[in-house]
Length: 187
Image (cartoon, rainbow, N blue to C red; front, side, top):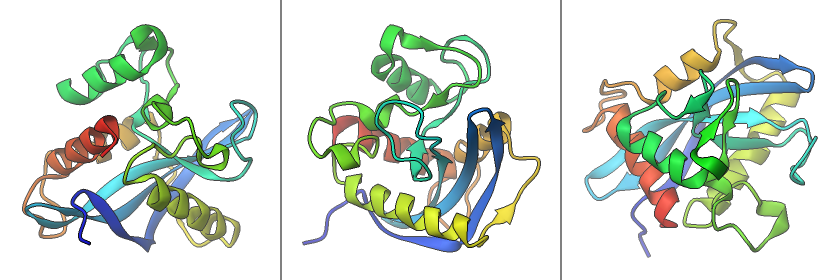
């Protein structure tokens, strides 16, 4: 059965990463995926981080999805109006500190499957988990592009880029907002 909004593959050769923090040690990265929408299959950039395993029962070394990274402490203003609204709804208190990895959306409503905590609770859960495990292997085997300029602003600008990429029908921003919507509603 064809499911709309489903990640149908990822592109290992598109994996790019950089060090985000050293204490605890965290890497951030971007990976391209193919998502089946009602208007066709689109290639979309997603953001991930490598867990230090320091809290919330996350697995050390596993890569988890993030919406982006908080640039300023306070309310969400870093992203699009829609994404800021979703993060406000899914984040305790509706605000976060500078440098916070915006991952609460992927924990929202996720009650079952402890090993899958942090990968959403809908149609994307298994594919995001599989991507996270694959990124772990790629990282450990140095199969990624080191982008030293990659920081919070870089990550956020790439996932919300208002341009059409890879001959897509829609912009990266439109496709990313649709992905966020699907995760938010548990699609």
